[in-house]
Length: 128
Image 1 (cartoon, one colour):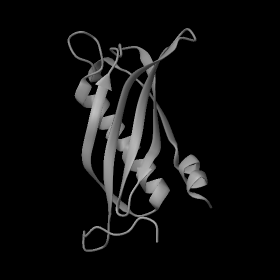
Image 2 (spheres, one colour):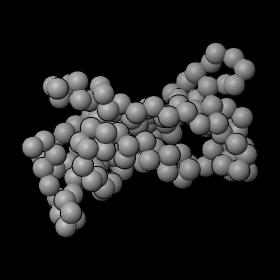
Image 3 (cartoon, one colour):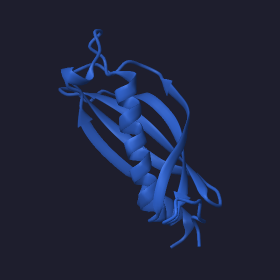
């Protein structure tokens, strides 16, 4: 399988409903909750690509373009954006959809860096 095919095969999509218990006093999704969901999707994407132990080492710029209201559906999309020797970057986008109409907009974009580790928790090569 080529690198491009592995990237496509590892793309991860998860849908979630935004319930009131995940929102702040403005009835919009907590930023920290969005970041938690994004890191989880990024981790799954990195693991699906490498099939190795992966750990998050940084979140590189997260842009909140619009609030995500309670009572909406979000789709998180994770895609490998860069591959190094022992590390990789995963771009995650959150799209928000209204439940009862076809409107869909990109709300949040971020990038997460991961390192592959061996059984001794030392960095190891991703592409062997």
